[in-house]
Image 1 (tube, rainbow, N blue to C red):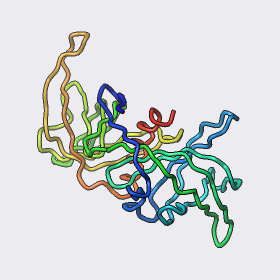
Image 2 (cartoon, rainbow, N blue to C red):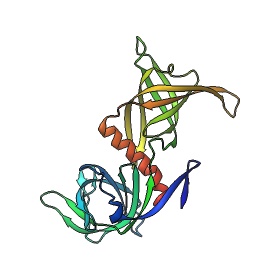
Image 3 (cartoon, rainbow, N blue to C red):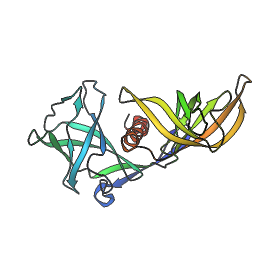
Image 4 (cartoon, one colour):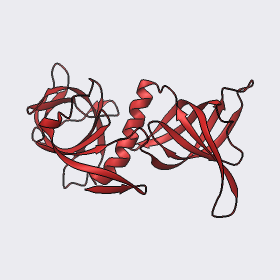
Length: 239
C-alpha cells in the first residue's frame, strides 16, 4: 500500500509489532502521539512521554498534560497512536489497560499485534509556506534577511526569497514558527546554504531558491520538528 503526501509516495506496510519490536529505538522521554478513539468528536492530539514497556505486554507512557494539568484517563479508553522509532513511524490502535496516579501519573497501553509502518527519510519533505527570519553568521555585521520556507525535513529546508538570504556556504540562524498540535512553536535552527538557483514564478517574477542543510539541531528542537513531521504524516494515516 502507498499514500500520497505532497506529491510524493509514502510507502505504508502492515507489520507484526512484536517481530518489529516497535519501541526498540525509543528512549525514555521520547514523544508518543495519542488521539482518543471516540464518537464525541474530540480529535485533539496529545503528546505523552515514553517511559518503558515490554514486547507483547505493554507500552508505558505518561498521561497527557494540557495547561499544566494532567488529563484523567479511564482504563479501557481507546486511542490511535503514532510514534517514531528510529527512522520509522508506527501507527496503531490500542487501549489503556491500567492507569496509575502514583508514584506519578502514567499508564500501560496494550501492546498492539499489528501496526502500519512508514519509513521517515531524513529527506522526507513536508510542504509549508512560512515566513522565516535569518541571521547570516558568516557576515561581519551578522546581517538580517527574510524569506519563505516552502518545504522542510529533518535534514534541511528550501527557502525562497527575492535576492537570496546569503551565499552558498554561509552559516545561518533560521528562525520560524510551526503549528504543532494547535500550538504555535518557535524554532531557531543552525543551518548553512548548500545550493542556489533562480526560478520563474507563475506570475513571471524571478525568485531565488536556496537549499538549507540543518547543522546540529538542539535536542528539544529536534523532538519538536519530529513531532511536526509526525503530525503532518499521521493526519493522512490516522485521519
